[in-house]
Structure formats: structure tokens, C-alpha cells
Length: 134
Image 1 (cartoon, rainbow, N blue to C red):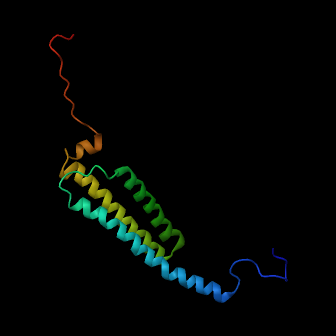
Image 2: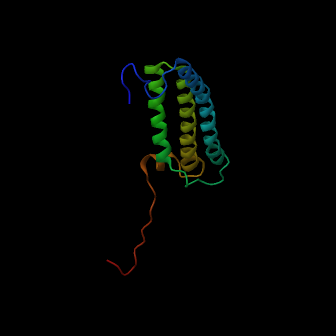
Image 3: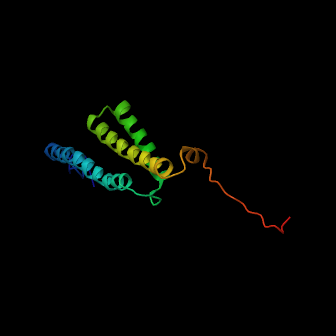
């Protein structure tokens, strides 16, 4: 419990401890950016080397992440003006956008029926009637 003038507040109160923690996070933050970027590599490699459309990767999920990264990058550049955070958000945006573009390219252009089916969701269906049905 904190009583004014008698005890220290819980947590970091010493200036040296605060500086040390700030230095630690300033070191870890860019490292985590590169570690997270390595997670995008296998997805991009899979989509680039695919010999058929990869249906196991959800386009809607990657589109949501891309939209989230657009907002994050905009906030980082327009509101925070933090260069390190802007670079981190920008790299994540580039990666998620690349994956979305590769999914669309593979499904609808490279292996699919063209962009028309992607835009309109049209799937040709042939209905056969039996000769004795009305």
C-alpha cells in the first residue's frame, strides 16, 4: 500500500530502472518485427510455388488483416509520427497485401476461371432435366 512520503509506489520508480526498461523494449521491438515477418515467408512461398489453387488459405481472413494493417499504418504515420512503428506497420501491410494478391491471382487468374468469377461469384451450373419430368 502506498502512503505519501513513507513507501515507494509499486512498479518502476527509479529513473535508472525506467531507462533500462525503455532500452530493453527499444531493442526488442524491431527484433519482434523481423521475427513476425519470418512468419509470412512460408505462406508467400507456398502461394508462389503452388501448382494448383490453394483452398486451405482463407482470403477473407487475410483481407481483414490487410485492412487492419492499413488502419495501423495510417495511424502510425498520420497520428503518432513514430518512424519505427511506421516501418513495422508498413512491412506488415506489404506482407499481408502480397499474400492477398497471391491468393486472388492463384484462385482466379492463374488456376481459375478468370476475374469474372472472382468479382461476381458466378459458377456455371448445368441443370439436366429428365425426359419424363414436367
